[in-house]
Length: 266
Image (cartoon, rainbow, N blue to C red; front, side):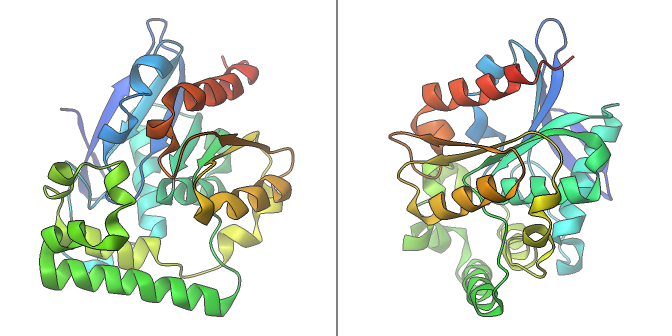
């Protein structure tokens, strides 16, 4: 079980290189997910690329610091930066699903020199409207308090967690660190600035935006990002919801590999 000591914590990661080594492609999972959610991609992507996945802090087999001050959007970005540096990776294709996609955008803003291309899956750029941001943050605070007061089991059974259960089986969700998830919901998923959405038009790398056809909560955000990021491609995966990589892996893999192959990475 590879563990990297980065940014003051132990981070679990997996590296699946092609036989020839391959160009680095790193994907970040969704909230309450783990590396397990990329199972349908590992055997396919690793044939051509050096496919790297990891458990974010507060998740899975990575460390979950007890202090809320150990969590923020930029701290999570720094985790990935230090992970890539520890693996001697100077540039990579960076992508993620849901929260992982938002963090990929933020990673680009902090370290554009390390990003060859972006793959944004079932995600959005955050909110510009203060009222919408406040409402989103109230939902994350409610989620965090449920975890802290009622525990993982109650969170897993809550109707709002049904989407999470599409990519994290209940038995795996119950093994997660409740305090880590609560801190992530409050400090990382919660929106605390408008930096990402304000800088979309300044992205200068090839970008693929992917959404599931049935993921109605993110279709508009995907369309907005594809129109705002210069030259971005927008692909809608049929017969798929939020976890489109699991719902329709064949179509998802074809779309992402087509994009990666078009970059002619060396």
